[in-house]
Length: 329
Image (cartoon, rainbow, N blue to C red; front, top):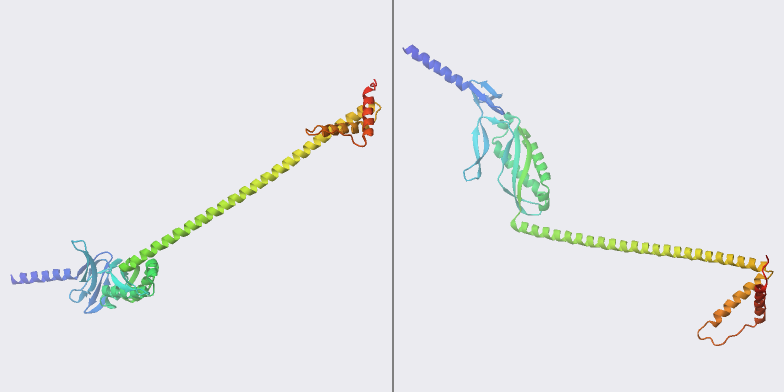
C-alpha cells in the first residue's frame, strides 16, 4: 500500500515536471530562456521543451494601452515573459516643446516599432518601453527646437523623417526597428492661434486684392487691345473704301473719256464726210456751251461777246454751211 502511494507521488511529480517543461509559444511571439541565470536559447513558435527549475523564461517590462469604461485610454505597464515580435504602436501623452522662436507648443506623437532581436531587447536595456518613450520625447524637443513655429506646422513630414532616423539609429543596439513616427497634434497657445488666424485672414484679403487688381489690369488691357484692333480695322476699312472709291472714279472717268472720244470720232467722221473742218466745228460747239453757262446765271444782266467774236461767228457760219450741205449718197 505504501509502495503504491510512493509510485503515485512519483508519477504525479513526473507529470507536473513534464508540464512545467512544456512551453507553447504562439505565432509572432518568442521566449528567451536562461539556464541557471545565463542566456541559453530563444524559443521559436510552437511546442518547446525546457528543463524545469534549471531553465526559466526571462521576464521583460511591456507597455499596454487600455481603454477604461468612461472612454479614456490609460497606459498600463506589466512584466511578461513572452516577447511580441509584431509591430507595436506607442501613443505617447502630449508634451510641451519650445520652438526656435520661443513658442511653447503641445505635441502628441505616435511611434511604430518592432523588436527584431529579443536577446538585445532584454539584455541591452533595462526598461524598453520607458527608454523608447523618453528617447522619443527628448529627440522631439531637439528637432522642434531647431524649427520656427511656422516650419513646425508645415513640415510634419520633415519632422517625422528626422525623428525616425534618430530613433532608429539610437534603438538599433536595443534590437528594435523604428518603422514610422507620426505627429498627431500640434497645438500652439491660444493667443498664438488667434494671431495666426488674423494673419491668415490678412493674407487672404491681400491675395484677394491682388487677384482683383490683376483682374482689373487684365480687363483694361483687353479693352485697350480691343479698341486698338477696332481702330485698326476701321482705318483699314476706310482705306479700302477710299481705294475702292478712287478706283471707281478712275474707272468712271475712263468710261466717260472713252465715250467722249467715241463721240468725237463719230462727229469728226460726219464732219469730214461733209467736206468741212471738224476742228472748227468742235471749237464752235464748245464756245456755244461756254456762252450758255455764262448767261444762265440768275443775277446775270449783261451779255457780252469776247474779243475774238468774229472768229467764233465764222465758225458758227461754218456749222450752218455744214448743216445746209446736202449729204453725199
